[in-house]
Length: 435
Ligand code: EPZ
Image (tube, rainbow, N blue to C red):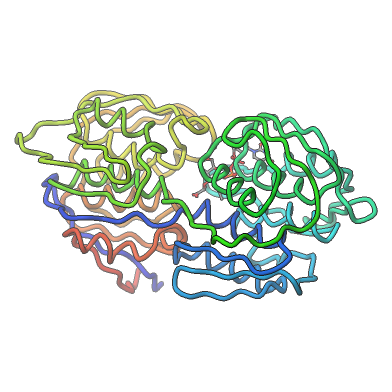
């Protein structure tokens, strides 16, 4: 079988990467901002949009739905003026859970929307009950036939509602924030997700005249109304805090001096603090993080720390896998508690094959003993975030690794091999024939 792969030569613990690595726009901010096109009378502009596979899929979805999409490397223009379709295309929507964000603004604009069940995935079950309950609260009916949900608002207009999210859900908060803007009356959303991507979306909508109170808190109050006028200023995608976190871990393990530029360290304190306590030499600036004189003392190991994933501002589940790679290289035993998704420790079996000492106790809990020498192996990227964690592990390891399933990595990270090469990593993209 032929598979596109990354071939990586490990540094065997040497800290030889150096230079500057720039953080791109956040996937999870760009996707909801793209979905917001349905809330506007005319064309909106988005900047600093990462050139990644998930953005391309959202782009294709919008085009299929009749949105006029123009792209000029990292800048997008989206105009939903002539969009009429209300069915999300099955193929793409099923492959990308984030497609569900479209349901809120589409339902609010057209009074109906149908979409496939986005399905579970390797990181967990990923139910959609919060969405379905919320739509009903806003006066819509939900019918399910052959795994396609058809949601219809009474008289084609959603009604404002008081919604308490039983779990803080990033995508559900964004979906109902957008739906409420075109509903009749004042909606109150409680137990909202606090992730910076939610705040960034809300601030953009406010810049277009939306009336939203409580931005940055767990209660959002939204005044419903008509379609919004596009704002003069474009939406500028915030830096990807997860990408920044991955580069930070990579730098801690493999770089002597590294500048992680164009990031917002204040959104990443849940990782920065434990890394500092572990002994990683970090200098924090407003928009960059410097790793300086790392690895000066030969064979000195960082101290391990425990991880418990949590909604923002807690430790992000999307950084759990890269942080576990760090812990395999730190001295001591640490516990890992993945509280958000139940399949998100599965990737650890591959780290164990590389030589890591990791025990998994149940679907949510494990422990890591370090420091262990990792050896290069053939690995398959299981999801976006664990995929990049494998690249970090392969660079820290001794010997050559081949990581296939690069599509998952390309879903979330732009031209990763080019950017890592620029700081000295030996990584190349190759088409490999597997027996
Ligand atoms: C967002 O997913 C991110 N995706 C994920 O990043 C991230 O891992 C996750 O938030 C948690 O931070 C995007 O922003 C596009 P949730 P989301 O709804 O919104 C449960 C990546 O690689 N839940 O906040 O889908 C759910 O099962 C991705 O970029 C329900 O029970 O996650 C989970 O346990 C992966 N019912 C918890 O809520 C529902 O109807 C939080 O998930 C919805 C969610």
